[in-house]
Image (cartoon, rainbow, N blue to C red; front, top):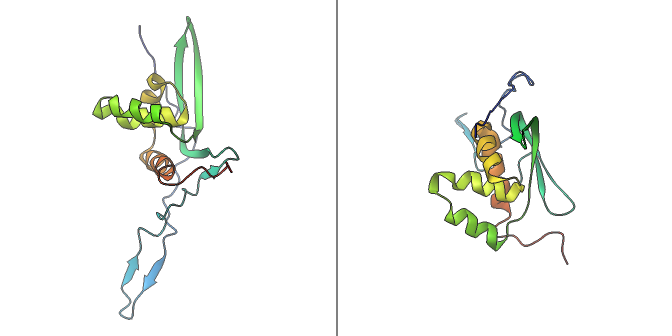
Length: 149
């Protein structure tokens, strides 16, 4: 079986990298940037918490994958990913995956996308989107459900 992957990088113009981390000036006019300022459990700015407790991340760069199933080919567009809380079975699946596949399996289980598709999608994602997705998944650990009584 042959798989095909098509990525259209012309859909969006490059966006400048900006930071809103707090900037502190001391008496000697030396700038100190608190790089941990946004990390205290906060979701990335491009993320939205949904009513069901899931979190939708708008990707910096939309990813397009050509998928072939039952002899038919289609293009799937991924401008966003929606991450869901993990269950024990998800954790076991991630733990039993090969070490190099664990990040993609973690994303697949949380985003509820087939692992075969997520491996290709993960490989084409922008590193900043991967970091943001990781922060979202990490936010599910250590905090209880926010939508249940």
